Image (cartoon, rainbow, N blue to C red; front, side):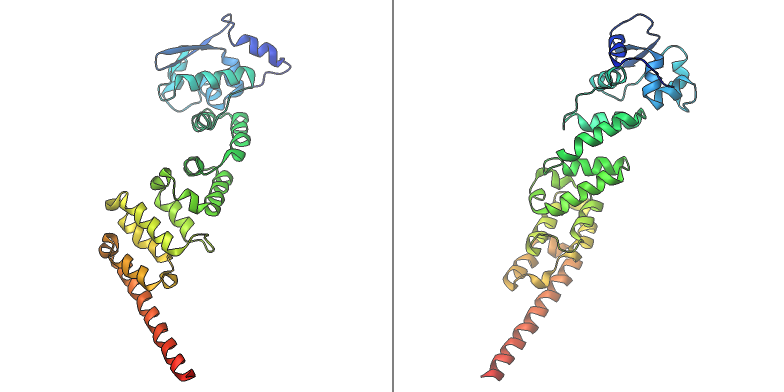
Length: 265
């Protein structure tokens, strides 16, 4: 369905013109009167609902001239309806996740494109982890990859944010296993310990996998001795083995150095 040759200003005027409105959207007790044609033209979800093609309960309810949607904020629904009439929407970093989720739910490709154009230059240390998960959940591969690259390049600063403690195992391992991560290995170990201890019961097995990406052989002997006494190191057999191997390797190198010095003398 298309609204051909209708000036945008006229559609905008219809937003608050109650005449000929023929459908009601009820969100958490708040009523929004709309025109079926406009909602169907902008939203694949409402088009399918109003054409009785939506395979869920709202399609039956819509036959009565209204639908109830209680799992969205009223102010977000108001913004979505406003966009249908005006082709304009106010996007902020804070509102973005809910607006994007609504655009995807209501199958509004033009709004999804607006969201994409808005958010890409806004990605920074304060929001990249949240956005990475959001794009992952919505299968938005390109933007998800943009966030992954940003997190990799800024791993040190991101690891110091409160949000980092909530990063999931899949994404954290994907980052720490990459070559050339700009992060000292002893700092990486400390970070993995802190992340794991944030929820040790559910993350211990993940720690065992990710700690293998720490290059313990590049860490000094005294630091290895310190790490070996950590509660988590003593609880993880994998970590114990890796630290012991690194200490043994350092000891062998030390002996070789002494032997070489003696030979040179």
